[in-house]
Amino acid sequence: MEYIFYLTNSCNLKCKYCYEKNKINKVIDFNVIEKLLKERVNSKEKNTTISFFGGEPLLEKQLIYDTVTLGNNLTKKSKHQFIYSLTTNGTLIDDEFIKFCKKNNIAVGISIDGNADVHNINRINNANKESFDEVLKNSKKCLEANLNCMALPVICTNNVKHLADSIKFLINLGFKSITCNFNYSDDWNDNSLEILRQEYKKISDIYYNEFKKKNYIRIYPLDTKMYLNIHKKRCSDSCSGNRIAVNADGKFYPCIQFVGDSRFEIGDYKKGIDTERKKDILLRRLTSKVVCDECSLKDRCIYKCGCARIMTTNDIVEVSPIVCETERIYIEIVDNLANKLYRDFKDEFILLNYRK
Image (cartoon, rainbow, N blue to C red):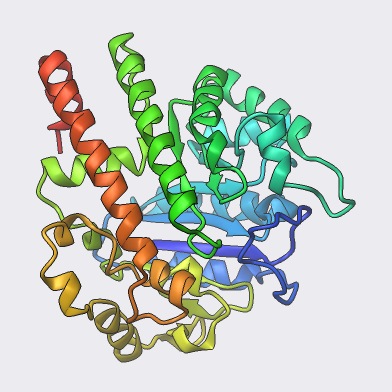
């Protein structure tokens, strides 16, 4: 089970592509978090993942400190384990917080899009000033402290032509894990999608060369596609409904992309989860068109992802051609990459990818 806590809807940046814009500023009440963590202790599951999100969660550092302290105390009494992660724009990370993350094994995802020119295209602060220098400084601190951290670049039409260079920059900076977040709500067309294809081909070459040097990085979605194919899992398996996003007002949603949208509210911290409504939303997400059912790539595609559907069509049932095209790009490139890695580095490839 995973709880994604929206600690606050506020943010100190105003990124051009952010889907959190125009939401009412509110900070979650610690009583909400406390109630949900204590309930998890009594569950039959052995662990619970707690993810801190926002807005910018580091605007409410004390809530993070209090939550982790509570979780640690509950673990001592019950043996139920809490696993922590955090998504941040990186501007408010300080030495104290790095020490806290290190001590409590908190995984940190830092939103950094690439070098200064690329990052500052979309990521400016509320005073309209560039944010790169601060993010770079704090990213280096996290990497030097050997925190479990990953880079979270966002791919948009206005920066896609720099994608491969950005990945190379982040690797050289020291990131071992990079999750590329595709901005489905952007205005993609045939030209920008072809640029995406060419950039991912370059990234495939970068991945291969790093593997050859025994620098075993992870670049998502390429690694996700590779893993799912090797282990014969469906992309939709990860959206099984075992995740609850908790908004700052205490209301529940099945995914972070749905937060604040009343169409997808599935309960709140007082009443609990509305299981029938949750089930209905998940079943509607699984609805697909005939064209998808007949596609040879359907078991490896995110076409059943409600988030992608909402961002591209604003409908949980409707599948966008953008989703189809990006998935074809990823799968084609990752299959070629996997075949080359298996051919040239069979032992290492099996060791790293065939363990479940």
